[in-house]
Length: 100
Image (cartoon, rainbow, N blue to C red; front, top):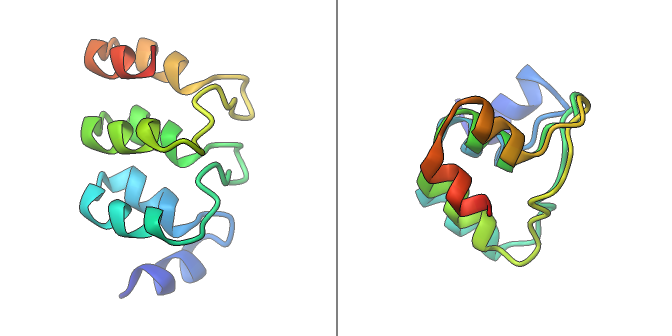
Protein backbone atom coordinates (compact mmCIF):
# COMPACT_ATOMS: atom_id res chain seq x y z
CA UNK A 1 0.00 0.00 0.00
CA UNK A 2 1.41 3.40 -0.94
CA UNK A 3 1.54 6.41 1.38
CA UNK A 4 -1.23 8.13 -0.56
CA UNK A 5 -3.49 5.09 -0.31
CA UNK A 6 -2.75 4.78 3.41
CA UNK A 7 -3.60 8.38 4.18
CA UNK A 8 -6.81 8.22 2.16
CA UNK A 9 -7.98 4.87 3.52
CA UNK A 10 -7.05 5.22 7.16
CA UNK A 11 -7.80 8.79 8.18
CA UNK A 12 -8.64 11.73 6.01
CA UNK A 13 -7.25 14.20 8.56
CA UNK A 14 -3.73 12.74 8.49
CA UNK A 15 -1.34 13.89 5.77
CA UNK A 16 1.59 12.04 4.23
CA UNK A 17 3.83 14.30 6.29
CA UNK A 18 2.14 13.09 9.51
CA UNK A 19 2.80 9.49 8.51
CA UNK A 20 6.46 10.17 7.73
CA UNK A 21 6.90 11.96 11.06
CA UNK A 22 5.10 9.26 13.03
CA UNK A 23 7.33 6.52 11.65
CA UNK A 24 10.49 8.66 11.44
CA UNK A 25 11.02 8.25 7.70
CA UNK A 26 13.35 11.22 7.37
CA UNK A 27 14.80 10.23 3.97
CA UNK A 28 11.42 10.77 2.31
CA UNK A 29 10.76 13.91 4.33
CA UNK A 30 13.63 15.69 2.60
CA UNK A 31 11.97 15.00 -0.74
CA UNK A 32 8.58 16.17 0.47
CA UNK A 33 10.03 19.39 1.89
CA UNK A 34 11.21 20.37 -1.60
CA UNK A 35 7.59 20.33 -2.78
CA UNK A 36 4.68 22.50 -1.80
CA UNK A 37 3.11 21.19 1.36
CA UNK A 38 1.74 22.62 4.57
CA UNK A 39 4.46 21.64 7.03
CA UNK A 40 2.23 22.82 9.91
CA UNK A 41 -0.90 20.89 8.85
CA UNK A 42 -2.74 19.41 11.83
CA UNK A 43 -4.86 16.32 12.26
CA UNK A 44 -8.22 16.34 14.05
CA UNK A 45 -6.39 16.45 17.40
CA UNK A 46 -4.46 19.54 16.39
CA UNK A 47 -1.29 17.48 16.12
CA UNK A 48 1.31 18.61 13.58
CA UNK A 49 4.06 16.45 12.08
CA UNK A 50 6.58 17.99 14.50
CA UNK A 51 4.48 16.83 17.46
CA UNK A 52 4.42 13.27 16.10
CA UNK A 53 8.16 13.21 15.44
CA UNK A 54 8.86 14.48 18.96
CA UNK A 55 6.39 12.13 20.65
CA UNK A 56 7.96 9.14 18.91
CA UNK A 57 11.55 10.20 19.61
CA UNK A 58 12.64 10.62 15.98
CA UNK A 59 15.57 13.00 16.46
CA UNK A 60 16.62 13.16 12.78
CA UNK A 61 13.04 13.93 11.76
CA UNK A 62 12.71 16.62 14.44
CA UNK A 63 15.97 18.20 13.27
CA UNK A 64 14.77 18.35 9.66
CA UNK A 65 11.45 19.88 10.66
CA UNK A 66 12.98 22.40 13.08
CA UNK A 67 15.53 23.49 10.48
CA UNK A 68 12.77 24.23 7.97
CA UNK A 69 12.01 27.96 8.07
CA UNK A 70 8.27 27.34 7.69
CA UNK A 71 7.90 25.08 10.71
CA UNK A 72 6.05 26.64 13.63
CA UNK A 73 7.89 25.05 16.55
CA UNK A 74 5.52 26.76 19.00
CA UNK A 75 2.35 25.31 17.45
CA UNK A 76 -0.04 23.88 20.03
CA UNK A 77 -2.13 20.76 19.70
CA UNK A 78 -5.75 20.51 20.87
CA UNK A 79 -4.52 20.02 24.44
CA UNK A 80 -2.44 23.20 24.38
CA UNK A 81 0.86 21.31 24.22
CA UNK A 82 3.79 22.32 22.04
CA UNK A 83 6.47 20.00 20.71
CA UNK A 84 8.67 21.09 23.63
CA UNK A 85 5.96 19.99 26.07
CA UNK A 86 5.94 16.54 24.46
CA UNK A 87 9.74 16.31 24.54
CA UNK A 88 9.81 17.28 28.22
CA UNK A 89 7.05 14.81 29.00
CA UNK A 90 9.20 12.00 27.63
CA UNK A 91 12.38 13.46 29.18
CA UNK A 92 14.09 13.44 25.78
CA UNK A 93 16.94 15.89 26.39
CA UNK A 94 18.37 15.60 22.86
CA UNK A 95 15.09 16.60 21.28
CA UNK A 96 14.47 19.28 23.90
CA UNK A 97 17.79 20.89 22.98
CA UNK A 98 16.79 20.92 19.29
CA UNK A 99 13.60 22.76 20.17
CA UNK A 100 15.23 25.42 22.37
